[in-house]
Image (tube, rainbow, N blue to C red):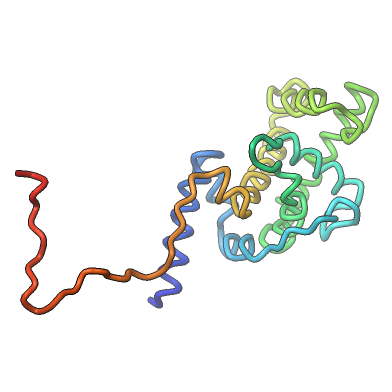
Length: 204
């Protein structure tokens, strides 16, 4: 196995462990299947994703999705999921790596959020306050305004949002504990054939 392939496999395993802590192992594995990881890391965030139609979503759905991202992972001492274009990421990832069922599930989840917003507050999701948006999403997860199947569709969308966030520079270096690897090992102590190895003095 080539060094690059070993490193990719190791990085994928590390990332799966991190993502599993946030969304669960089964959900994390579902978004990392096949080429999911490499496609995700190749995505370049765009500043205007919500202002135009996506590859899968309409422009109106992209705006709703943006506000869902902002509600799921709001800004704290780090940028929100919307600020790092997780909505654009989700749209791209669904088309590049997921089947028609997953695509339709996420479209249905966005439409559900919009319907529930209109039903509860007589306004679109984008027009709601942050507290109202949170309530709409919590009611879905509590099965107050959604069936179990609809909740599963929303969870699938939410997993993709979290996955997208933790593939961004913001998510990796600021939201997580970042330990940069600077490159190969560079020894600083001269060694010859007569140099002795270090003993375990710490144990005596």
